[in-house]
Structures are given as structure tokens and as C-alpha cells.
Image 1 (tube, rainbow, N blue to C red):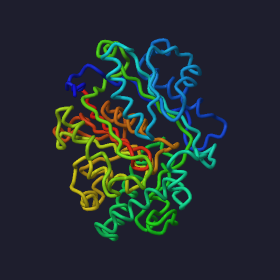
Image 2: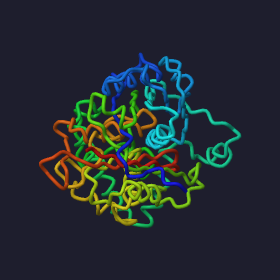
Image 3: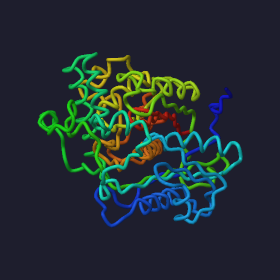
Image 4: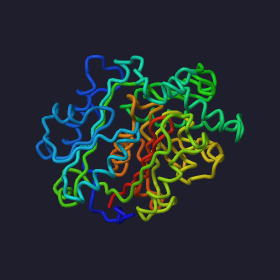
Length: 391
């Protein structure tokens, strides 16, 4: 297979932004969140809608999105494999730009996830309706909880619980430093974690991501176009994508996600190793998702995530900055979250994150230089991993 990723700094992210309001925004539709985020990201890049000729989105029609924005794209991508889709779109945009199909790619996501909450309709012809829903497997908290239960059985309940608590508390500390985070003004102690109500055992409420209204957008372009953009380009060094099942009952191993394939591949394509990474952004749909992703990406071995995150290692002041915006657990999560991982990674690499700014491992006097971003989608089904870097 041809290696599309040549470890060249020829494709860059030049604009990122969220929608204007996040949290509970009952007066705005999903498309409005798409449009606001797109407008803000293009403003961030110093570009306009007229410059865009590639449209990428998931969970929502790219036809409707492009029409609403007034874009007539020469390339469109509606790849939809859950919340990882937007991370995967970065690689697809890279390939499309290199192939000459477009030169300014706009990746958008918007979802009134909280204000329009409703029972999700299920196509009776799909396997989930036949083989899972009749037996009570009717949502991601239940699906992920079943996987986590197996992990606890295999590696120890108390140890796993402590790792989950460490992640929830550390992530909330980052949110307390982020004025845009929904939980910005709400601290979380270990006692608060253990006392929070159950959702689906072994998950407490704070093991689960938020449900919010929000949107995010990312602008990807060529090095040539990037030179004339407003902000410092953040280069796409490598990426990988995979999915190994759809319904959770077909998951090959409840204790391991397909990040075990995409992580090493993305790092190899980028020409970097784990010690080069200054910032790690991991989709935290649940605290458990973070644990098996850390293991899958190769930061620690299977069953070692709880030890890896112990003593608030991933919190502000720790030596492994993780999910520095507050994550899906405490910042925002409208239903799919991958786009927000990219927004924070780019801002950190640009040095735009104020009190939560991460420094370079190799030179503490400089801001972070390299970030790895990993999105997870479906029922631990799909993974997209991207390695980003600044000059």
C-alpha cells in the first residue's frame, strides 16, 4: 500500500474554532452550530467561505451543510463512523488536497445534542436492532460499561476504578482552567467522584461524557495557501484510521480498542516516537475509553493504564498533559466529539491556551511542539489517530 504520509510539512491546519455558544442552547439548530463554527474557523485562518472547495462532515448531510453555508464544493466527504470521523477527515483532506481535488478543506460538526435529546430510532434491518436492543443493549453507556466490566474482571476492579477516578478528577482540573468548558466553575474531588450517582455499573455519572449543544470546525490547506493565512500553520505529519466491528457484541476484545493499530501506524508515518509527544488528546466518551486508548496507542501495556495515570499524572502540573481543554467529560460533548480534540491540539501548539498552556518536553522554555490526537467512534468501533506539529 502506498504511504500517503511522507513526513513532509506540506499540509496544514490553519483554522480552528467552536460555535459561539456551548452547553444548553435551545434556540439554535445543529446547522447553526455548524455554520457558526465554520465562520469562526475561517476567520481564525483569515479565509472566507468563497475560498472553500472541500466540505467534510459526519452524522449530518454534507449536502445540507454545504447548501446552508453557500458552498459549491469540488470535493465532498461524508464518512461517518462515529465521533472519530472528524479526526479521520483530516487524513482524507490531506489526500484530497495532494490529489488536487480541492485546496481548502472545511471540516465541520454541529449538534444540538442536549436541546434535541430524543430516543434514537433504530432501523429494524440493522444487526443492533436484532441482536442487541431486545436484550437491553440500548445505548453507549451500557455498551461501554459491559466492555469496562470485562476489563475490571481481567485486570482488577479496585485498580481499574482508581484509574477511572484519576482520569475524571484530572480532566475536571483542566476544565476549571478553560473558561469555555461547561464544567469550568465546578470542581471535582475524589470523594465527589465516588459519591456521584450510578449510570450503568461500573460507571458513575462523572465517568460519562457530557451531553451538550455545540459545534467545531477545522480548516485544512496546502503549504502554499497556508503561507498567506492569519495564524501559524500546524502540520499534519501522519495519520491512520481503522474499525474492527460495529455492534459491541462483535468487538474482538472488550479490553482493547483498534487504536492498537492506528496509533503505531500514525506515529510511524509521522516519523516520531512516544517520547517526542508533548500533548496527548484522547476521545473521552467515558473514563474507560481513555484507559484502553492509552494502552492501544502504546503509552503503556495492556492493563497498565491505571498505574500510568496515578497520582494525577495527567492533571495540570503533571508530566503527561492529557485532554487539556477538559475533554468530553467536562468541556463539551454534543454527541460526537472528535473535532474538539483537534481544536485544542492546534491551540496548544500555537501557544494560545493561557493558564493551561503545555510546554515542550525537550525545551520547557517553549510551548508544546508535537501532539497526538486520537478519536474513537461507535461502540469502541472506530479509531482515527493524527500526529500534529508546529515549526
